[in-house]
Amino acid sequence: MPAKILIVEDERITAEDLRDILTDLGYFVTRIVSSGAEAIAEVEQNRPDLVLMDINIHGDMDGTEVARAILAGYDVPSIILSAHADVHTLRRARAAQPLGYLTKPFRDFELRTVIEAALARRKAETAAVADDGAGKADPRDAEIAAVSEEMSSVVRFVCCIAQNEVRIALIEGEPGAGKKHLARFLHSCRRHPNAPFVVVHGGAPHEVEAGSSATSWWETKAGGTIFLEDVEKMPPRQQNELLRRIEDNSLRDACVVAAPCRGLDQAVGPGVFRLELYYRLNAISVRIPPLRDRRQDILPLAACFIQRQNECLQSDVRGLSDPAAALLLAHHWPGNVDELRSVIERAMRFERAPWIDPAALCLDIPWNAARTDAMSAS
Figure (cartoon, rainbow, N blue to C red):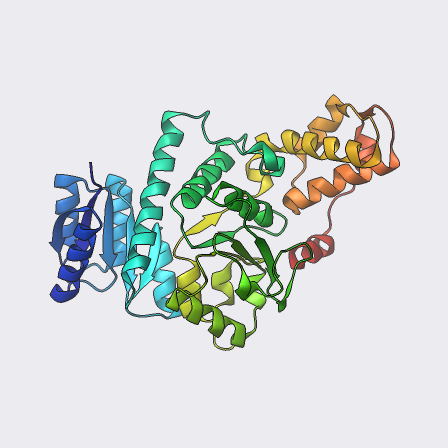
């Protein structure tokens, strides 16, 4: 059964064009309305799967207010449409918790991609409620460790992104949360997992990480993945080139996955990061929860790191003692997964006992503000 989509758009020609495109793509358009009151009434009566919501519509409420009301009252998500690419509009749109953004004018393939990813995310969220055992991470990258429901839902959505061949995605999260590992997992779930995975550092966009099979990231072969690490540090000239290639659809069918050190919206501004590029990259976004908010993943991650260090050091550490495990679970983890990895590696290099005890973890010294700030800046 085709997905049902409601169009909320006050420009009649634009609305009819959207209806024609959606119909050609195989979706069922429940109705076209131009005001918030009509939108809420239509959602209450027919419960669409998704709403295409323009920000500037008729009535007392704007599109973001209507989208929030529909999500809160009827659990129906929206994709936000806007002709205005500015920071104020961005903040209004984010408040509506949409499943995607599109800046007018946009192309048919962009609309299709955002809708497919939004519906896939909705399907993944529904599956999470129906089956809390689904969506565990691929054992090929145990650092994903999707034991917790918080991380399992992220993994399910990333799988949907890969299976729907989404070409552009944004991965956000605190420093050390594992953005690069999640990007690699996304790549491994695509149709061509053996295609190149190219890591590009935002501060040095002409440099490609050692081991990547491309001398220039623009040369990434079809089916490959370009991971833009610390993308907010990308120079304006490279931002312009990336935006042009995205808009021209000239990246040779490669998937672009961007990851900022911290929230990319904080970097948007003249001479820093282009708002138009932000909208393109943020059409489909994934946020990795901090490790302190998914404590069920701490011990599986620790076990993964112990196994790897055993192989590296040719040692035979059996695991954590009960007091050591309790200490890991109680720690705040401001450095997230990277900090946990470092703690385990340090403990195993200087302690060769069969079981890791609390003293070997060196976590009894409080983290001071200076140390936390230093890690956040890394």
